[in-house]
Image (cartoon, rainbow, N blue to C red; front, side):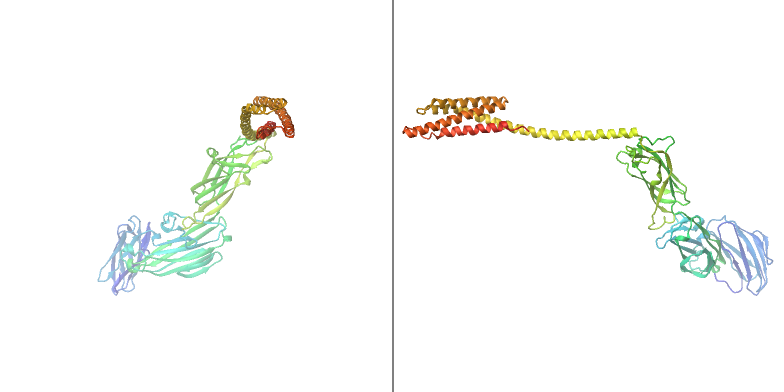
Amino acid sequence: MVLAQQVIKQRADKLNYFTGSNHIVYVQNTGTNNTYLNITIPIGFVASSSSSQCGLRNASLVECNLTASTGNGTYTVFSNGTLNEYTITNLTCRTNNTQTCNGVAFVRIHPSEIWHTLVEFGRGRGNYFFDTTQGLNKSGSGRSAEGCTFLPNETLFELNFLHKVQNPRQYYGVPTGKMENATFTCVYPNRTFVRFHFAASIERTSQFTNITYTIPEISTSFERTAFLGMDFDSIEQKTGDQLPITCSNFVADFTTVGGGNFTITNDSFQFAVRSRNPFVINASVAPGTSIGNGTQEVLITYNITNKELHTVENVEIELPAPANAQFIGLRGELFGVGTEMYRIEKNTFLAGESHVISLLARFETNSSLAIDPGNFSFSRTAANIRFIPCWEAQGYNPQEYVQLVGIGGTINSNLSVASSVTSIFGRINEIFNLVVSINNTVSNTNSVVNSIQTTVNNINSTVNAILDNVTLIKANTESILDRIVSMQEFDEEIVFLVTDAFGLQQQARQELAGGNSDSAIQRLREANHRLEEAAAKMVVQQTALTTQGQPTAPADDSWVMTTVLLIAIFSAGIFIIAKRPEK
């Protein structure tokens, strides 16, 4: 909108509104003629006051009597905020001469759609954890999550305050319209700067830093950003501290399009420093629960509370078994699942929320030396909790915090074991050890029996072989006797000795078959003695015959000696086997 030279100029101090708001309209006669001006007040607005040059005919009509060149006046209209968002409302005017006047165009829009602050925790991870947009305490660049107004104590971090200014030309349907000379002032805690942009002036005090920002033009884009980056040392942030950021007095010139300024009074917010370790855990046992005198299972109730004001996410809690407890878990998990560490996971742990869980701990109480006789306290154990705090939750790679939480609470009972109970457990252990020893002995005995059985089987096989050979000898006995008798002039005493030896061997066979090995051996000794005597006589007679020139026995009488020798060896074998001790 380009104004001619001979015109009545109107300019509003505030073109924007969202709720009920007053707007002052300044009127100036730049022409050379005195002019009478009528301004019609549109629906949604009412005229509320005026100056000496401009008077109210009624709530819907303002009349201004402006002298040439120097005639200035003002009037005020009130917007009640009932129109739809983004509605454009024009104030039209009419002169009583050829001079023209420009209109004023108001828009119903939320202040944060013109000016808002996005706060980043850290740098370069997109962790925009707080945004003043729409006054709804949102977070993230997409404004889709709940915002966080808390900062961690005793932690080194960086904050970047991104003050965004948006050109409202899109709502006016003017794609080339400019917003110019946007200015505002912000007051921050007095910390170290690491970067800034569009800062026109900086003023430091002992506690705060004042910065005035100026953005010359917002035309080529719908948005420009003034920003400040600050470092916060770990020693500077104490629990309970407040970090206010006060931004105010935003004014931007939009005269060429809307006929005035966009004005926003305030964009302030505040962070509270809270503990980075939000959890406390207390454990207790139901009243009347006895855990002494040898009781092994104790039902313990754990109360896990987020004592802080901020929400945490992705919570994983590891509860260790108490000192001297073998494992911990839900009762249904104790058989095969219970371990020395019980884990709980929760997606979100709200501020002040408590989670209660009862877990069964099993103690080894069969020895009074294993557990202190005094009160049982949980102070020896600590839970390990991993979580993501709200100021980290919106990052691309959110940092996980870890808190080692001491478990509070004391059970006013002791786990010492009565001597009688300890004695009983001791006897049970002795019996158990004895049973184990007996089982081992039985196993060894079975091995020995199996070995003896194998040996007996081998002996029986050998005895059967001997008996078979004795039977064979018996079968040949008759043949041997026939050969001896056929010997010329053979001594009958020799025949008697041999036949007697065979008889003794037969008796030995029968006694051996009957299991009387001692008697059988004695018979074999006697048989051997008879054979040795017969063999000696045969040698003597053979020598005598040779000396007298008598005919010798038929050819190859050496078989007699061979047979006698074999019988002797065989008898000795029987003797040795029969005397072998049993295993």
